[in-house]
Amino acid sequence: MKLNFSLRKSLLLLALCLPVAAAQALAAGDNEGEISSGAGEDVRYDGVWNVRFDGGGSAVLIFSRQGESWVEKGRAVMPKVCQGKNLPLTIQGGTDKGVQFTVFGSPVDKSCPDITYIFRVASDAKVQTLKARLEGGGVATMTLAPAKQGKKN
Image (spheres, one colour):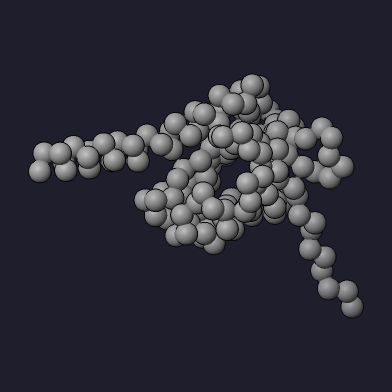
């Protein structure tokens, strides 16, 4: 019985530490560090963004005056219970060089991770594109979706 309790305790500790470790690894992998909001700067990333992951899968990110949300779409590293749900996020900073935010999966389900992303403006892109390095060496690419046009009479 003591081993069983110890195992549960270890698993609980691991579950609590993984989101923090992932966020730290992401920030550490980005050699330019965090993106914080500049004094007096009001950089907006309003709109719908399509996010693609090198390892497969995608997400939709929405920045709007009504709030922000993240929807996972078929990424293998995310538990099935996280897929297709609006996950809340908090923006830590945004400048003309990029945006940093944390997606909170844990309010939806305990198995959904909380992940911090640091997206930087891609200098070689022809459309508005940002890129983030992911833990494990992958890259996520975030591209602004075209605005929907109203119906013409």
